[in-house]
Length: 222
Length: 233
Image (cartoon, each protein chain N blue to C red):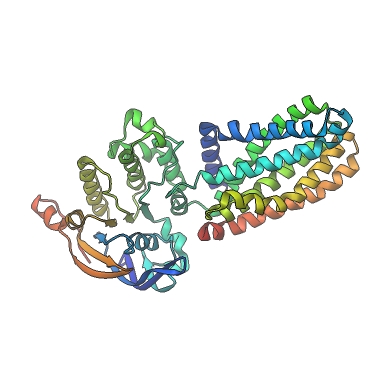
């Protein structure tokens, strides 16, 4: 399973590096949305700083939808999906590989967004480890849930519009918990931030396990 | 194993409609079977069922000795499928595509270069991304995956479509080599002339059923040029 996961993740990331869809579409959309939020909220630094965590994770959330759609577009070509099914790869490995590739892209998005947010909103992390742990757990949760729902909608004609409808409500707990945890990391209130990790951790674990178990049947029926 | 493919009264649905309606088919070891028929006759569905990609809703379906209703994934690992559209990633080079398929099958990536060379994809072409290759070249790359994997059952959907004379000759040679290596081949075709010439047996489908089974001319042709064939079940 792990060997297959590495193989699929390597393939997906190589394709992304070649096609540069993530670079030219996902990243600009994420940064642009952050800038537009800043415009909408106005130039008051205090307002921007207090809203920053929520806006950051909202931008990451939309990036997740785009990255997931792209991840499944790779296998949308006629025959490629069948090719994957007859390849002998463990479906759980496909799930983990696809989720890992999406997670890697989201990590890059977050680094760029963080730099943009520091520049635009003038915010600074007081408890960096808390933000890092929250990011790690949230990224795993977003990537695994996104990949699972991506597989669910992959075989459908209306997948481009259906995926956001399916996945955004499901990812709402991650948006809430990651925003609150980051808020704690920005203000230095560690205890309130840490309490939200108890939402992010189980969310990531649950979707990781569900994905490993259910991805095979989803691939069969898709 | 008496039969590589054994279908008895196999029914397969696409959506709510039966694409196969009680198909009986036997394919023996080392046999090359052509499936012909009009559009919508059930040729592609038949190949997908044999590959374990589409379940049978009723009837018996045993491929390579494995009951498809019990363990279709086990069959998939042992068959090679060349679909109507080659299963290639446009952004990966020909070599990378073949290497990925080999690693996915748990085989050594070092088989890629000889297989690509066997189908005539060498030098610059092997380093070209699949999206930059012509349709015929893409089909050759997809064929090289089968050559490298050496599956026990080759399933090819319209493999002759869009190929020039050289590629068609190559395909015939690959069939012969596969059979010599102990594999069986089932391919679909719109061209009855090609299907008769390249097969040991011709299965004509109509409306999701086998309408007729007749002899092909491959063995006679091989005998005429002095090449031995394998036994036909």
